Image 1 (cartoon, helix red, strand yellow):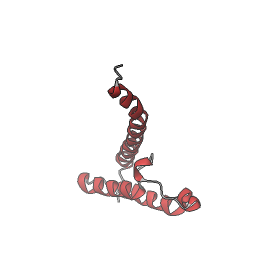
Image 2 (cartoon, rainbow, N blue to C red):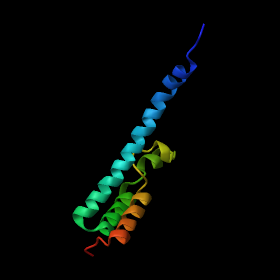
Image 3 (cartoon, rainbow, N blue to C red):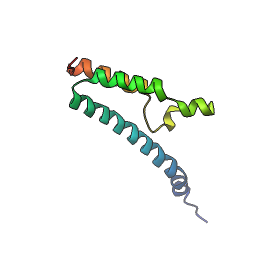
Image 4 (cartoon, helix red, strand yellow):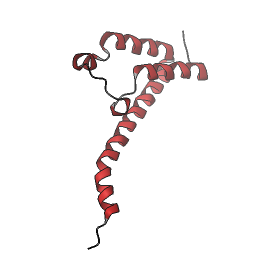
Amino acid sequence: MNVPWLVILALMVSPWLSMMLQLGLARTREYDADRGAAEISGDPRGLALALAKLERQQGGWMERMLKVRVPAWLRTHPSTRERIRRLNELERETGISLA
């Protein structure tokens, strides 16, 4: 009997691969939304400051309650620190700023 091991392996890996692609897409869309908001508002620094304030106010509440850190590769959103870094980089690269 000839067992199609490659097909079986593909079927076993495909749900995991699909989930990883969805998580990656969600993070990419978040970065794109930040960039679009910076272009519309003209103030990437202001957006970065707002993200930092939100993080201080409510960030990580689930992790604090459960005392468990969610691995970065399982998050649907990128870390606030990375989003702020990219907004600051955008401001330096493009000179977008009304402040």
